[in-house]
Length: 167
Image 1: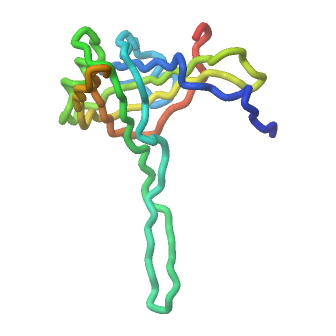
Image 2: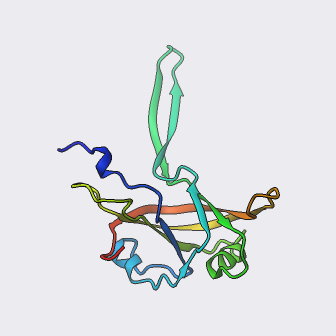
Image 3: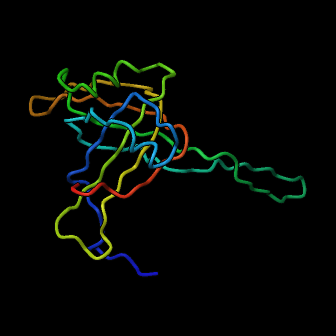
């Protein structure tokens, strides 16, 4: 298997985030591709939260001094979005309205090329479903933009797919 080099990396520049209130018919790339993805978050600054699969450690210590370790359930974590505050952003307004609801929403992260493509460099998409836990406002200083932090609790597995031609 070839090793990745710096030319193969995908940077954050040009990454897009789309929202859809609908559920995919199937939890795979084909199911998510069938959604309309009409609402894009326009003022996206960062995507954080360290999302992705993480197993819960289950430990049991015997009286004889041996510690047994097992892997429990797998959690996909949560995603934290920092978005410029705007009532004109339909996706942001829709996500804010879902705070505290048990309704699942769909998100698609779409990466893009960051310069000349290396031999192994290929943009991709990450699909997910989750519940909106928070929409916190930050009013910055005189030289800052006002932002909203959206926190989404991910349910189900992340789905990875190649980017659509033209991205």
